[in-house]
Amino acid sequence: MGDSSNESEPEPGQVFEWVDGRIDQRDDWARRRRKDIPTDKQLLVVACMDERIPVEEALGLQLGDAHIFRNAGGKVTDDVIRSAALSTNFFDTTEIIVVNHTDCGMMSALDDAVVEGLEAATDESLAEVDLNPALPSLDIGEASIEDWVWMTDDIDDACQTQIEYLREHPLIPEEVTIHGYVYEVESDALRRPGERVSERIDTRVSE
Picture 1: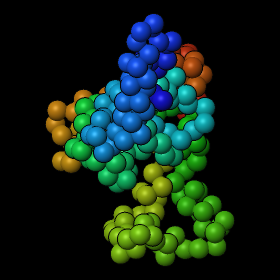
Picture 2: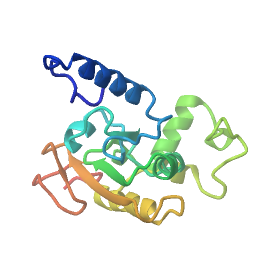
Picture 3: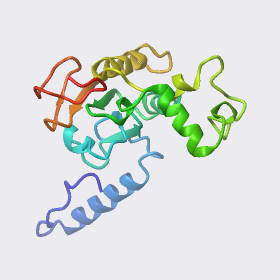
């Protein structure tokens, strides 16, 4: 369980208190949504799905501390907004942290190359593919598939953009604290957008 505060051995004459505490703790953990118990840190993290990014370790999180949403590039997509709106308005989340990273796969190719590759691999015209199978009537409208794929040129600008999207969205309460960081895979460290830890980092354009 997320809280280990009752893991010590019971004191003499207080075994029932120790057992009762364990029962209550277990029930709180299993039924925290029904009991309106928020995450331990009242935190939502939006991060890239890249397997090299140790999100919990980098942010000092334990099981139960945060809602964690990971996707390609750590992008604030419509589904991130959906999850963030639920987390902040109904689950008492008061803080959102975005984690992007250097040497991201979303920087390794141009938008049109990715679209061409998907079409070649699936033998499908992407214009005919439902973006949300549950709601096939929803599409990207006038936007292009390149916009939907959403590759990244500058990871620092991208991180700042994700922060601004969340701060400006009407479904996210104004009092929610929103910050973003870039995880440098070269230095194994978090930094603020626009700063640098390593002398050299991997970007779309070689430095």
